[in-house]
Length: 414
Image 1 (cartoon, one colour):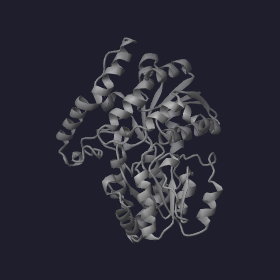
Image 2 (cartoon, helix red, strand yellow):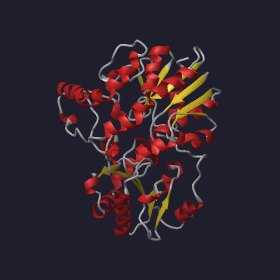
Image 3 (cartoon, rainbow, N blue to C red):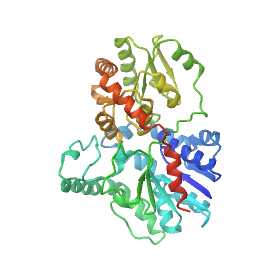
Image 4 (cartoon, rainbow, N blue to C red):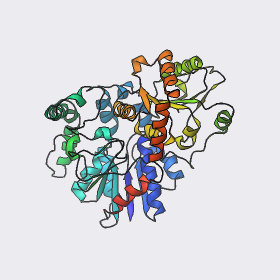
């Protein structure tokens, strides 16, 4: 079969699809990945066919917009700047590559053009959800920074809140462009886009495990949970020599990263360095955007652009990060405590889940100071209960291959 994988977003959104593509290719399938031009080298280096969906310069421009990390404005900024402009290109790519009986489409849930192509062309489609925060439930709703009260409301009020969010936020942003596009093919308008419509009625796959997000009775019945994909460019992007030398030259460092898409974390990077000085520990700053890194770093703090977390984190004492689902999963499998500074999107939900699991803590961005970071990290590193929980979670990953399980379900769509 020919598998067309369609993804939109940052490295955290693209990595799982490269992992799926690598596994499907290993099984003998032809694999094409549609993504932004920015990821062409990564996809090609993994041995997969690449088709461009958006220019690299456009992606870089979006990353410079501070609104994409705002707890209230973030949704509108991300969808208007990054998601809706891909509606037509996504549809056109699926239409170009789809051959009945020979092609299966697997798409990120926000690749709405693929969902419309399924309705128009009848192509088999698996919707991929990377995080449980996007799955609505009146019984166990996700945690949002803009709706912190949601988990405490009775079920009917949770449902009413979701309807209000759709009426005030999601549909005003999404419904107009999506329904205008649908009308070109004679499709009726849809409402509450992110309630039910965006799930493929054939198959939806959550790339996270049941112990992280227990399935809810009001989730889509076609949803299956495969587990964390854990693809991180290992074997494609090696650990740099200066990092290898740094890791071997002293005690395990505390690693800090605020996401591959973050370009405005200069104050947090500075506070992180100062926290290391307070703790008298070694530190590692990970960011592809050098302008965020303080000048004249102390000798026991190193900056690197990137390192595969599956190789790096087992050699670290702890991880401090933004709460992206991919980074959260890598810390969980490495068995290291984590401190999350959530900003927007699914990050507050992931922060809440790691706290419930007893493997980490959270600090709001306004409280991310050197003193607070040092105090929290010190507490995590010297807590035997946290260490036990980290080991228990690490053991849950042993012998489980989430990518293989997800690909089994995708292959069933032929």
